[in-house]
Image 1 (cartoon, helix red, strand yellow):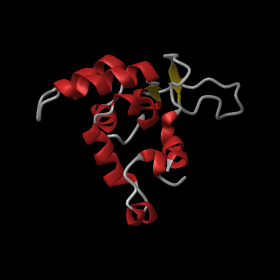
Image 2 (cartoon, helix red, strand yellow):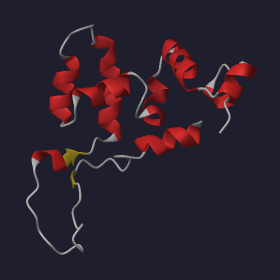
Image 3 (cartoon, helix red, strand yellow):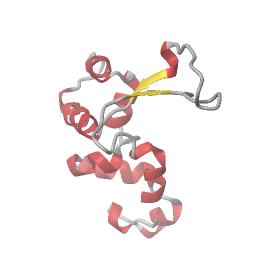
Image 4 (cartoon, helix red, strand yellow):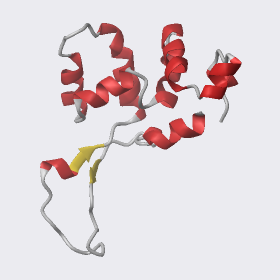
Length: 128
């Protein structure tokens, strides 16, 4: 379970840096320059940013614009913000902030069939 979580991009921004990453840079042998459009440049979210976004989930109300405002602040998409809130991304980073309800929701979504059959009730008891 944890290995699968780590393969979903959890390491992005783990060094605490905030930098622009250019998609496809160096694709022509590494020496050429090319003009990039807006869709080819993305902001790399830091672990600290992901934790702050997760903490602010408690202020979110249905149909408000909080995900859009946070997305604008961090240079990411509103969906990326909602993915953090819905435990789809940055799970290893935000786990220490989870409520008991978050843990149960995560287990209900992410446990393999064998762990569900065994009645696993905590992430620490789940298989790899």
